[in-house]
Amino acid sequence: MIIRTEFHGPDPGWSVGSNERTGEMNAFNDSVIKEFRANGGRVGGPFEGRTNMVLITTTGAKSGREITNPLVYVPDGERIAIIASNGGADKHPAWYHNLRANPQLTVELGNETYTGKAEFVTGAERAELYERMVEIMPQFDEYRRKTTREIPVAVVYRQPA
View (cartoon, rainbow, N blue to C red):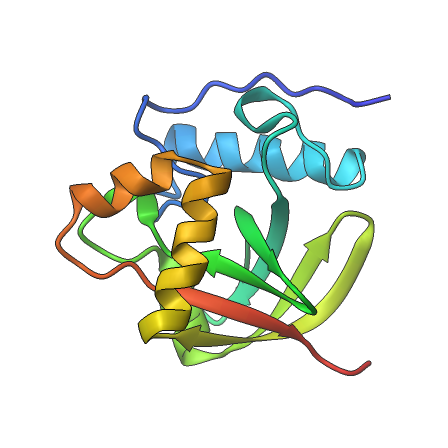
């Protein structure tokens, strides 16, 4: 049984993992996190049946506190790739800065929780992973058209226990 949370994104252009962690977005992300944890990594609403969801917990670059964000990911063998699109905004999401400052993170994938290490990739590898994300969620094509920045792609490696 999937426990459902009502999904009401702040506006049609919102993105899970956005830098806007106040008000409606904070409440929305919190509801996605709650549903993810209650349902072994499955969520409904705009993500039902069409995306790979993951929760990442990073250490705040400035605050030092733990911050959890729901994101979509691209499976890539033993690792996953996450995209710092920020919905096509001209600035990187906060979690990007957190991973730049401290690449260690906690990953919740389905019912599993593990420690990971993020590495930002460039060039052909970045481009290939981004295209794979566009195949999964076509709105990522719109995100890159909305901004002049190159949207970063990070791969997350599982760390030994």
